[in-house]
Length: 77
Image 1 (cartoon, rainbow, N blue to C red):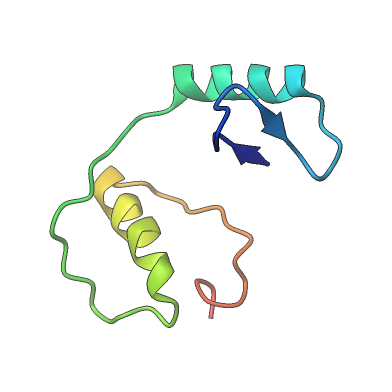
Image 2 (image 1 turned 120 degrees about the vertical axis):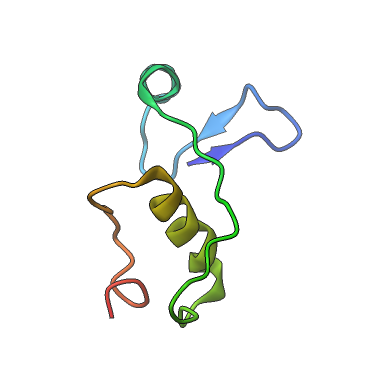
């Protein structure tokens, strides 16, 4: 799914999901989501993929009990 770009109202999904379904999902996400701001948390070790750092920081800042991810290569190794 791509959001934004030159036209923030335009959404595309390579899996063939309709725009209306994406909009409905995003509306629900906006209502249910809890926004957190990662703080200066010292991670015990640097992840293999440095792009995972913001995800881990957000996880810790939110005090979440679970992280659901499809990233089997880095986060789960």
